[in-house]
Length: 64
Image (cartoon, rainbow, N blue to C red):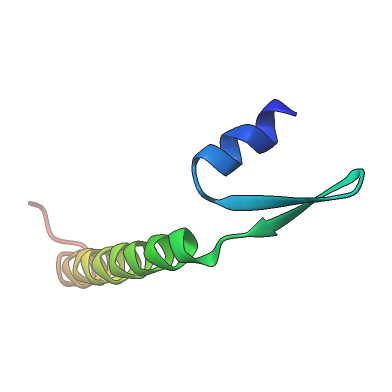
């Protein structure tokens, strides 16, 4: 199955063959790195959007 091979080569999952069954396990390490990056991006964008909101409230009704 090609999609599982891609996930395994990306080290997002690892598999183990037990008899005729192949068991897939999720590798949590790449996801924790991704979560850290997403949290940083979320914080950045919340700050930017709050600044934009403040600016728009200050300039409401004024011509710029």
